[in-house]
Length: 499
Image 1 (tube, rainbow, N blue to C red):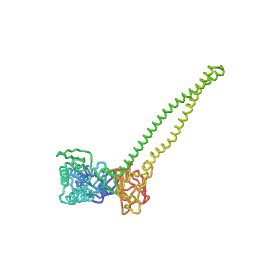
Image 2: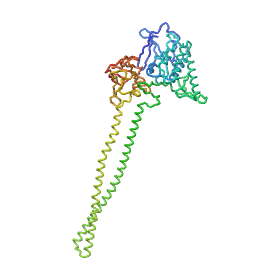
Image 3: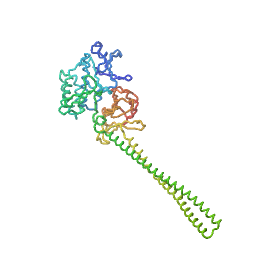
Image 4: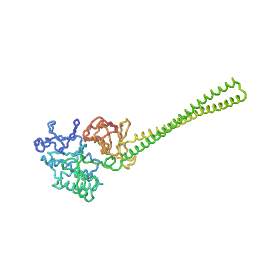
């Protein structure tokens, strides 16, 4: 098979094989894949360009295993998922009498649908049949297997060993793998959830087996194979049981935010209680002031009447003494009312002055707590996830240079993303992307930054809305070495590359 090309047309992407032999255009295998949509195989169509017959395979919204596992590791669950998808495709081929030897087993031509996580294989009916046709997939398992999983390593080696046999059948390895898993489950009264997942050969839906007391309870669910990103320089995996550093920071910020809210709520409640107390006190003070003022007015009136009576009647003896006693008593009452009416306002003013002095201090504290901390949080880059235990400022793959991206965040602030640890995957699929862009124009797996001879290079990964360098759209799998100052665009998200 000639080296295929990648072409993009509107919202579709194709893998194109040129120069299809005209003398074999009526070949049975060829006509079958053109006229039928065979489950597990890439849909194909025939086109004529410049006098040549070309075979177009639709790979829209799909990624090759080679790209998906460029910096990832394969566990036992992933090996079982790939093998089961392969077995399903072979079963579908047998229904159409398609020969197994024309199925291409190179990982770069095995594609995964990113939405359903189902695998699709390339069937090229004009290829040369190889004796060890499954060897490329077996070597891929050995190269990317997660060595932390003993059973995954054993399964990968077993597949490699069996695939070298002349009459190797995928079903035989699949049966052996299922048997080992079931034996492990019986010996250990069940196995871990990660190893309980099996795959139904009749459908792309997952089959979950619960082995308990010799009873096989099967429950179908619409989940597909789950692929985990390697714990490498950049890590953001939904399958980690331990907290990531970003989760810890998020919880810490949430805890501090709740603490500030509780403190503010406590201060508000305390202030409300104090205001209520002061209100009641002011109301009582007002009543006392009003009564004192009324008493003062009445005493003053009586005092004037007594003075007028003494002046007009000019009493003598006992009457004179009685009037002067009443006058003295009224004068004393007048002084008491005057003191109460005069003393209460000064007390209230003192409290109001004290309140005005205390309130700005409390408000300043609340403002500092409410606004100073969020500014610090916004300056922390939440998108780039560095390795655990990485020393700040340490040399990466680019000694003497600091490759990075700069761009505006959603709130209009300048953000900077480090590219010192490569490869870096760009997209909005949280379980895989190291540079997470949530814009709707960005594909789940959009592009990848890689090291190309000590330089930073960019590769488009079959994105829907394209990857652009200086407004020039990249073809799928096209590698472009970046220069400082290059303007990049992922869909509608614009960034600038700097060194």
